[in-house]
Image 1 (cartoon, rainbow over the protein chains, first blue to last red):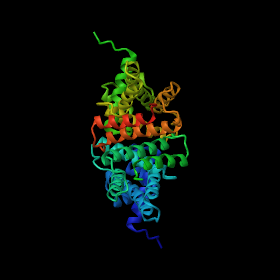
Image 2: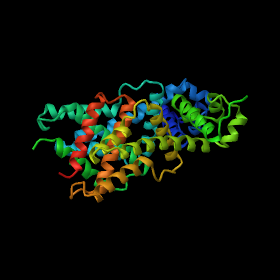
Image 3: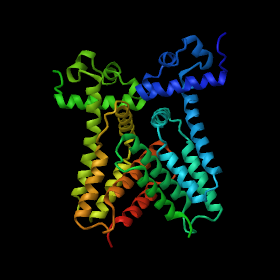
Image 4: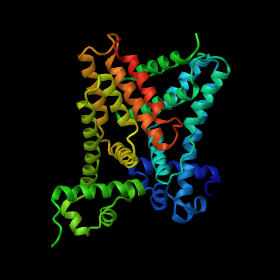
Amino acid sequence: MPKIVNHEERRKIIAKATWNVIAREGLGGASVRSIAKEANLSLGAMRHYFQTQDELLEFAMKLVEEQVTERIMEHLKSPLPPKEQVLNILMELVTPEDKKVEMQVWLEYVLYKIRNNELHKESVHETITGILTRLQKAGLLKEDIKLEEEIVYLHALIDGLALHILMGLVPIERGRIRYLLKKELDRIFAE
Amino acid sequence: MPKIVNHEERRKIIAKATWNVIAREGLGGASVRSIAKEANLSLGAMRHYFQTQDELLEFAMKLVEEQVTERIMEHLKSPLPPKEQVLNILMELVTPEDKKVEMQVWLEYVLYKIRNNELHKESVHETITGILTRLQKAGLLKEDIKLEEEIVYLHALIDGLALHILMGLVPIERGRIRYLLKKELDRIFAE
């Protein structure tokens, strides 16, 4: 009897095959054909799930975003004080352990969107905006903070660190990264 | 009489054609064939200058680095005080005007190197390390500064800002970016 794999599950398997191909060969190598091969599917079967390369890429990227969001939600549900929660979320964004492939896919996607002039919003930016806005509303940030500037600053720091860790340029270990981010939060939190 | 174009000049023309193809189609689209077409050369003529796609890409990237280095040297030769010079260099790294293509090529190159596990050094990292090290030796930085951390921090901020400007995510104008970077320098400079 053939194994029953539901539609959504199969789409996820294909999306992860897409990640692997992108991480190995770049977006240029991620044809429907090469992904079908990676996922061990026929071209016909692939087309049953995704008609175009664009559709496939959008889904693969959506899956990255969903996983990141899921991990962030876990941190928000924890009983830790807000500053600790935020610090854990920032660490998640900067150095998701064993998530090199995720970061590569994200960067390839960003470049793809830049080429097509389609990038108008981005989930990490929205996450950081959301977090800082809520912290300010809750009266947890210093009163003289300029929110728009702090969002730009913190997001730049996060993505710059993530990029440099991916590039192997950051010679300092996780503990020191955490300490750097903590100093940054100390600067904007009240008290 | 045919126009005489010297070897190095022709290589630069080809490198810029490579930039344009990469900016438009990504590295995946930058075949020797598509670049020959962009540079208006025959495949045979192209191969006279560059034998492989790798060789071409390395040269195109070297040209990006040379142009950035040249602009930085100009700032270092200026009669402005050190802090102003450094601020101008940082602005050059963050928002090189009309240099969107340069940034795209740089990012594609970074991803290419990550895929091939070849990224061990990077010119902007070396520039920032060099500048902060010299400032510290000249006694211009606060005494309790931890140099290694400040290099990580400043480089992350610079590349994060550059990336977000390229992505169109930073809603604040050049003047405010300059102000953010100035605040950062105020934090580490002595006095």
